[in-house]
Length: 468
Image 1 (cartoon, helix red, strand yellow):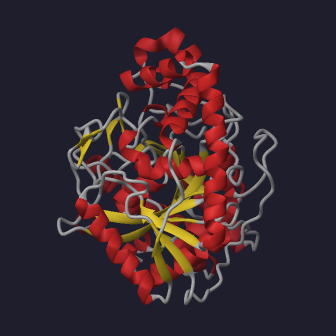
Image 2 (tube, rainbow, N blue to C red; image 1 turned 180 degrees about the horizontal axis):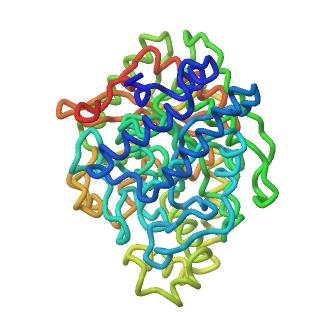
């Protein structure tokens, strides 16, 4: 079969168990795809192809013996280079860890291995996931498959680009201020930021970080649900994780009469007009689905300052010792974020924590009146890879390297699950995602609603023209 790289995870899994395609064939097809197009995209930065082929042969033997088990059995995956992989280089995109080889796996990697997945390698990210544009001094920049020369977003940009180009059917990521949603929007794939604790983040140097979560990315919602069912598990090394099972079986729901809140600018944020135009097309799809759509949003006053303080606190907690020892190896924006965290006051942190709680409750109460909130994922379209970050949006200057992602970070501060689903394309061919926010802990309902939107608006099936 010549099109194995085009198939989704659930389709590949069915073929493997029906013995219509071997695991070795599936893995070889995806390795060939990476070898062909990764020199252009730079999405995969470390590979383990020989070991993956050996594991694929062993999987085929298990299948022949009737011993194949696991929800991801035989499926090739890629891991973000911020997740540790035992015996396989993990750099965090930093020169300070350029030759770092971990002695243990991150929990998300262990869970995927236990489910039968086969790791092909690691995907690119900005240094320590700092920023929503994927480049670093170790590996350089990753390109968007829909528009080479433009950003795939970040910080899980390598994973999103790999998915869009057919390198794998599943790739993981993490999200603090939009790092699963922004690249999904830029690359026309699906990514979800789960509720806190649904996906374990251990081991980490900041175990009580309440802003950053791990999560899955895929090319369609059903594949995302399959992946989520594996990643949603408790882990003893993560004090915030609990056993919240997730079912891969999404139910068809009746969308007629659902109350949907639509926010065009999330409290007055600037947007590129082309982004809002595509999102408005998605809102019309929701109306055609029978939803009752109203313009409404929770109050976001104070959210930006709180997010910035808590983000800085997280950077200082995780990286202050590294800043002191190897600060010359860190990029300027990482040093700035660490220093901001070290120099802010206890009163600043206390005020931010109060706002964190308030923002959670604002969204919680808001979603008692509405079934879902929909809004843009990103405020801009993909921008040239040689630009570090957008310095202005629609004439409004951005204060720093993360200020252009408020449309995602304001949702992050609420703590509620949110996902990016392909919405449409601009006239110039740039992908734009729709952000859907659900009730806390209700990822199942969120994905079931997203599946109905995807079915009514199947633009996620449009693959990059140069990578077919």
